[in-house]
Picture 1 (tube, rainbow, N blue to C red):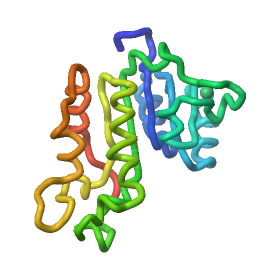
Picture 2: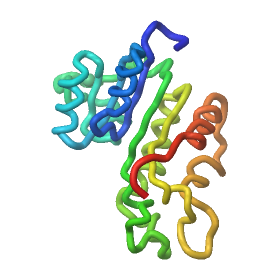
Picture 3: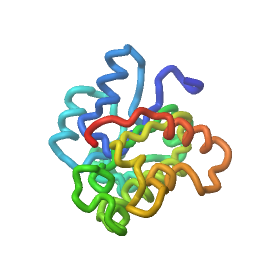
Length: 188
Ligand SMILES: [Zn+2]
């Protein structure tokens, strides 16, 4: 934590905010500068369980990227100023696993992954989050299928596409290494 005394966290597709539970259990002081979660019950859950820890909470990852008014500050024109998004220590994203899951019958079919409606949430919106916040460390939570080939006849995986083949400059390469090394959790 190079800035202040609290770990500055950004969370996308937050769910019940497992990161808040872990940081609290480890007794790490933290503040979630910005979070996003589609499910209203989940939003209610983490706001009630971690009072004062969430500065701005958006209903969708795409809204979080636009930085308009969040669900906590409806009448504000904007919720995350430039200073708010600087010095982010940790970014955690748990974008939908559906396109990559081995549980899908079409997982390895031609364009089966790329044509899934949630594909761009990870491959575009999450990538934009890295560019916007430039976190010191990033954790991408995804399923095992994320590291497997897109389809029959190719070796490239969604993980390869996300991490490689891009001109990631400066601090981004460090963040992305951490993405690559991050533990894959959840279902398959
Ligand atoms: Zn706000």
